[in-house]
Image 1 (tube, one colour):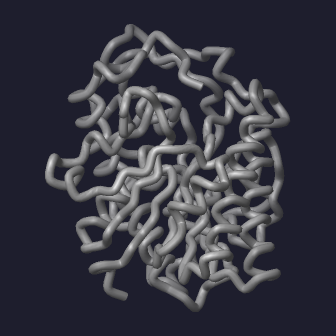
Image 2 (cartoon, rainbow, N blue to C red; image 1 turned 45 degrees about the vertical axis):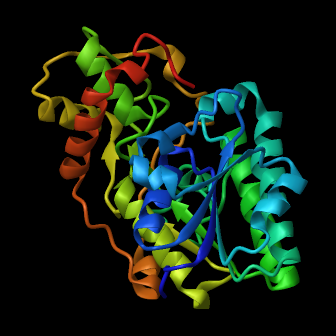
Length: 329
């Protein structure tokens, strides 16, 4: 599939993964409309890291994913839609669950309905490994039961089912991509890796939540490659595809690895306010990526240490954008 001249919409384009996806699509020659959340500061989020030339060639659409009229206007006439817009912070979902339903479920409904109405040729909907909950078996394949262990997870399961229903009911060519934990440059301190790095750079100790959960970590360029490969494969409409490395690491071992790469000997201590409620914590996520390998030819190309090194470099060069004294939810 050639992306040259393809009219592509990316929702959530100002976010961490979304900004990298926009950049990759533009490099492939796509004509990208980047949907971002409206704000009065004309702030493009992580798209601000793109070059001046890239930003000049980018069509920015600032609005709200919950506004069906706005969404329909952006979807109309597109060849491919990548839907990434979502509220993603798990701790904040405990405090504002209704917001997650409105953004993640109703927002997804708006995208699917507009894509059906305007007969869009390819839609890629973004899920999350959090929908699996704590592993019943590992590695986790796409047939693993879904478990709503947080309001965030519940909202994403609902969004996934909306996408599935539009394939089964209307034949909408939508594929759900389910990335495991993605990290890399531009990620906020809401996530554990930049949290560890910025604290190592600025504080006397590293304050974290539980150190025992196991996560499957994927460098953002690998994840973006997965999005593009999924979009290029029309034969997998209606399916869900896991994107993950297939390797797990505890948060404690992850922190130790980062501190070693930074030549930092600071202690790691428990911060109780960062610990999830016991029945909400997801203790093990390890991806079975065989389906991605077999159906779309995707596999991870970056090692954990290489990805962490690039992330350390970014956080070190952009310390001013982080608030290490504040627990980012």
